[in-house]
Image 1 (tube, helix red, strand yellow):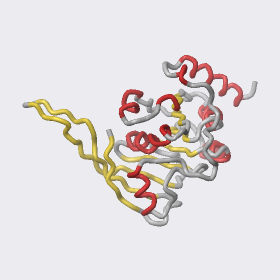
Image 2 (cartoon, rainbow, N blue to C red):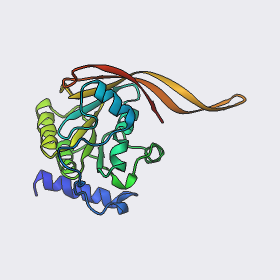
Image 3 (spheres, rainbow, N blue to C red):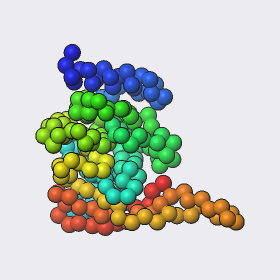
Image 4 (tube, rainbow, N blue to C red):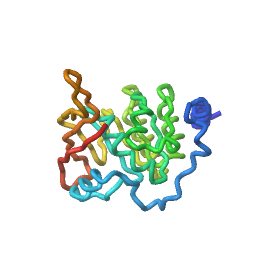
Length: 220
């Protein structure tokens, strides 16, 4: 059995054991035309257009989320895709909080989360064959050459890759960096204060960005 076949088998086993696994019938690609960008929320559409980029996630490109609250950026970035018919794969050391994702508006029936610490490259390639958006964190032991081959394979399969945190020296097409955070009060009762959401100041740059931008992003 090849490493790719092994990764696919492990993916199927993990999916069958997942508490949301029964929702998934198959990991076939959604029926959206390949040339169309994958949907993102209005906050992202506006800033991407100002940056002179397509108003969505472009298949085959790499998007990086960094800075403070980088996971929150990724959750906000991929949310609209799940409600518009796209499959999202989560293959990261930062596990997806299902409750938080549901509260953020994710359609969980179109989300697959797998653990791929041991065979990262093989698992990513296998998962990329069945999803349109792939959220990953890159282990430090993965060499830059192996990382490039893996990302290229995902790109060939028309998958948009969203990387969490450092990329081991590889540059992303578009980089979202949270530079400031303000916690927003939901309610205040005497001395008890509940913070339900956060407002981030996000910088948009990267090697494919003609015009760098800053924008506010409310998440949570």
